[in-house]
Length: 194
Image 1 (cartoon, rainbow, N blue to C red):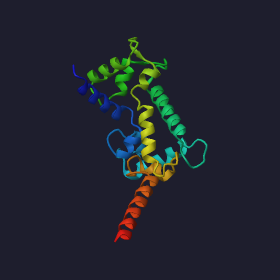
Image 2: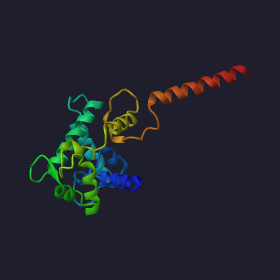
Image 3: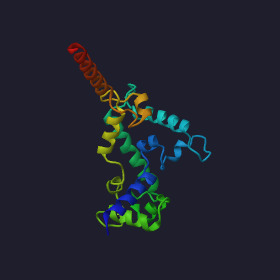
């Protein structure tokens, strides 16, 4: 068995089962159902922006109008626990294979079984929060998301940066200013030589 198809299926399952903020910015599959603010079954760009603005307020726990990296990580951990508890129908503090498969309606039962087996590292036929957390985007991905969204590289996200999402900024402002200054300096040097 090759790992590429398995990784591809795992990635798809992550996108469908555990949507993160970064998926919402991409507008791809896996937008959380709570983003459908009017309940019409369609998620519009306006609904995404409104939901993300509400998330910004939730994430900014110290209410300083900025999101720090630690606030963003804490938010993702909280969302993980909420999802886990939602799927834990029998409130056993673990997910049975049936609970896991029921939560994964976008993939086949066979794929859900395979994923379950892969992350059930202690082979006790139940997923702990830690095992379930393997399916969650890791801290590295969260840090990259944060760094890409932090346009001015000040180690905090404004609401504008947060709503623009990762990749909206081709580079941070400091890098752009440095590049512009270098270009201007080269132009002045060329003119002085003439």
